[in-house]
Image 1 (cartoon, rainbow, N blue to C red):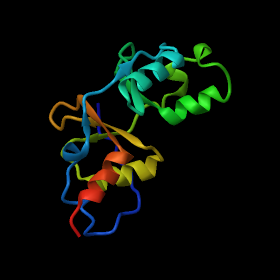
Image 2: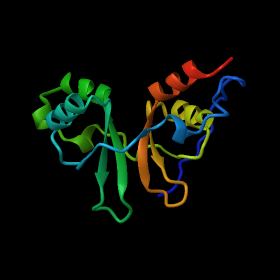
Image 3: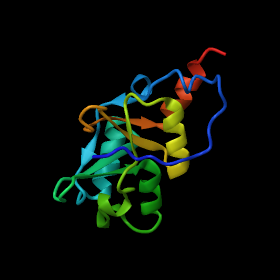
Length: 148
């Protein structure tokens, strides 16, 4: 897997985004499902585990593909038709934006802004294997804890 690099406007200096790494703010571990998982099951998993996203993993492709289904994706899908008739791959943002754990929160904020997403898959800098998820809420929490 490769790290996604995109440009976006920078955040203001002195807000803690430069001094905090993604690893320090992220949620370790990943809740995954197969691309063919019914969205009703994805929604049930989110509710049971109190998470706002599930990572869709498809290893049947030559290069494994990762996507993210967010709670907003579930709500949008439910507004169209019953969740039982829809699968995770149909609602997942694929391929998902990824960021290395040793990157700064500023870089994560820039990537989220550029990709218009609230979740990034966090990868190990050495192996590029996913290790967790960084949500926009995690960045907000880090900002709230930053000393002025």
